[in-house]
Length: 138
Image (cartoon, rainbow, N blue to C red):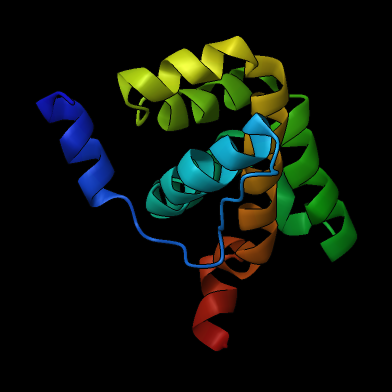
């Protein structure tokens, strides 16, 4: 394995709950072995990127109800192709060459899994997107 691959693999967090079994589909195994660790590694960057997305879209997010904020996150991830492609690039850029070779064999299904995990992370971190003055009051 080349140096780049070794470095990439060495910095990924371990996720003990992300098990890999013989009877798993290749997509599920890739999700647990590759996608989950990379997305966890990129968590802080994904939060910063979404905060910037909120700002670039005139902070409308802050005026929405909780349900509408959840819908906003869903819409950004699934319908805003520019944002979606940017997020995919942050994750794909952390693939080893071998992982990329596996990824391109079924990129559509893996993209769906990738975006679902990113959406879950953003939703679970929704408190980080509150207005700064609200955060100070908490």
